[in-house]
Image 1: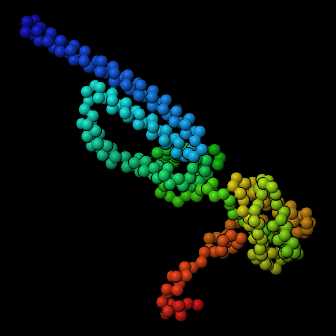
Image 2 (image 1 turned 90 degrees about the vertical axis):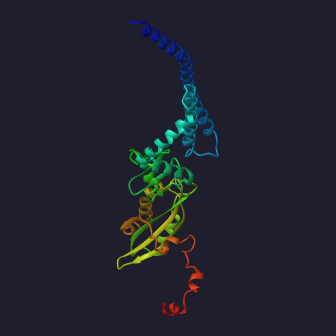
Length: 310
């Protein structure tokens, strides 16, 4: 082998050895930084979870996203420090990541939509963990709210993995939001049953003192009168947490009340759970009056239009 080639090889070996002597300690420091960073991230996540768990002012809805944000911030900082140790220019890396992020963002528009929807759900909080919600596609109890998806559990125990955009861009009913629920039943009775006695039975024969199925502000009024039957619309409010019990018990209780008072001849011919429609003024019975027309707008109508009104 020529002497020049041997000297060149030796020079290259010395250069690589010198570079390795400088790079390997930095690489070791970077690895240690990553290990320590991931360890601190997990420790801080557990610490924040315990700290937020003892706070009465912060509900469960935003605890998990906050814990995730703390964890990922520490991990990102550890990655930046580790890359700096091995000689990577972070400013150049940010420029590359920005360009790559634009391309990835265009390719993952649906995912970014879910993140935006998750932020809006956490900010406006149309529902919280533990609420039972209903959409046009599914319904269930909310078990977890994340930045990408929400986890729900249906009534029969089915796990639902719902992207946030499917909850944000559609109508939704929150069955757990209101403190009280309005329930109504249509009771068909024989004409032989005196109406006033029937109304007294419907408005007074219910569990008291916080018992399951307790009804508050019960009201009853005559809805229909036929040749052989009379239809009484009975409605009442149910406190939060008792709706299911009231729905199960009310029909049976109504039948029992009339059979005990009037015998088999007074047994209801039909008991049906209903709810007055949005345009039915009877739904406002016992509550605030039905919405009134805006007096200013009505008075500002042209005179010709008023004359044409019936």
